[in-house]
Image (cartoon, rainbow, N blue to C red):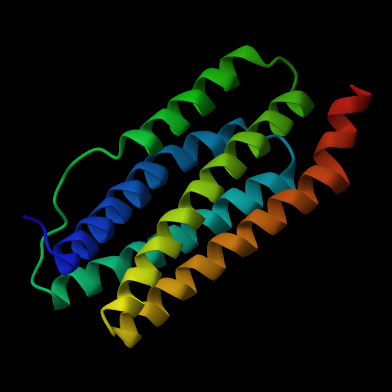
Amino acid sequence: MTTFSEMYIAELQELVNLETQLADALPAMMQAASHPSLKEAFAEHQEASALQLERLLAILQKHRANRRAHTDQAMEALLDETMKMLTLLEGDDLRDAGLIASAQKIEHYEIAAYGTAAALAGQLDLRDEQRMLHESLEEEKEMDVLLTELAKGEVNPDALAA
């Protein structure tokens, strides 16, 4: 039988896998993007993901838990759909709009995952860990807002005009 603490560790391990998969995909997303501001947003996300991964690994080390290699199937599906979308959309502007749509789906998944892990840490009275996870959660929310602003202000109007 799994304990609440074990469930929390499993959530952290899933987040490690999620961040690792995203780190592997972001360079291709960056390369596919044509708007400089979108390329920059993906580069910022790559930096944030590296810091978030460091936080997660530090928490796991504190619990003497390994990073447990497994594939987060939901993230894998989101990334597969992103790569499939890149092959279907023609034209830089339309492809950028599709990239943002895909990236926001990924962001929302990350927001849910970090929110869950932070809530579990709070229930376990692990305040430092909860703070670290909440910091990552806020970074994900900020990236979501940035992507929305890029879509509304630049990318979608350009795609519509193309």
